[in-house]
Image (cartoon, rainbow, N blue to C red; front, side):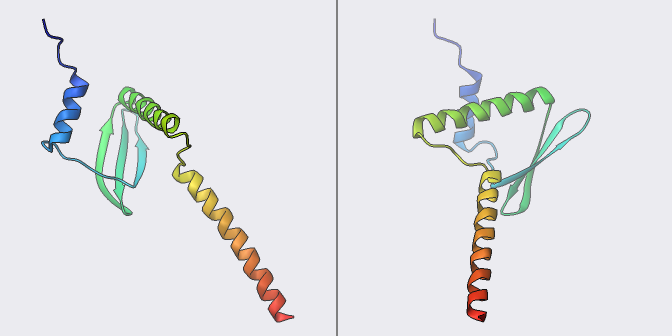
Length: 110
């Protein structure tokens, strides 16, 4: 007797087939109500779609995403930076650059 098809595998196959909508995002925003969690998918600074989910599904999704990224980090032997990490590095670089410019301008003024 053949094994029953895995519903998760079937969902991935259907998604890959193009039969259901697919979204790319490079940003997101989350909201919380007393009954569920909403996530706005953002593409190039503009809202593209909204995904609403129960707390249970949201937590399960967050764990699944973390596990997937952790697996990638292990396989690639590198740490994937979050947008918060990148923002902090850009801010530190900007402050360093601004201080250097101010110092150069002060030297030129002398």
